[in-house]
Image (cartoon, rainbow, N blue to C red):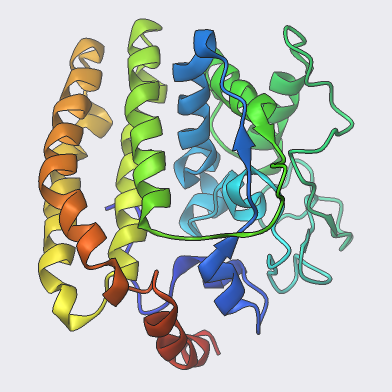
Length: 295
């Protein structure tokens, strides 16, 4: 499974001490402006945005994705890594930890931007500036593999779609967040199949398995052993698709897998969510243990 189970939630690696409960239970709200003509590509971008495999290198080893800094496509006021952050919500993007290409030997953390707000890079439809910028982040800032044109197009479509909500209050995290991203990856796979983009299809399979891993680490109570085993089994069913050469077979296989997943496992996960670390009470109980493990 792409997200390896551990005794501590992965997000605590890049969460400021004392911010664990807020980071694990809430996230910024985001409203996605979906263009019906480009929906599947946008969904592919949303799934890739939440996939450590996209960045590769040290980021992937640490299970960091674009969404680690830009939670729900926004910012992350809880983000903090010793040596990379000056204070919560900041990160040094010119550090040799991720890449020597942009390393400047100076600790100069900057505030993590909110992608729902206008930035220095044009996001106008048809302007390739955003895709060029995203490519530089992946290749130069994180030493990731050269992304395909379709991958960049998908990421650009997702970033352009991120909007602030009218009621811009934090929203609760839940297992439904992972279901949403799994569905986005399956929808995106259809678009990438039509583009015959094998590399991005493989990334989308990894994206699904990563989301299953995030569910797995939250369902860590002894009473949830059946659900955890089912998650492992479900992940293994699509593992071989990560290297599948036949492009035409990947998207249909994922749709068939999703049909079974939604019918057999999703209802069980929803029914037992109250016992998982998505639920406030179990999460609060687990936090002292999690804090000790981080020391």
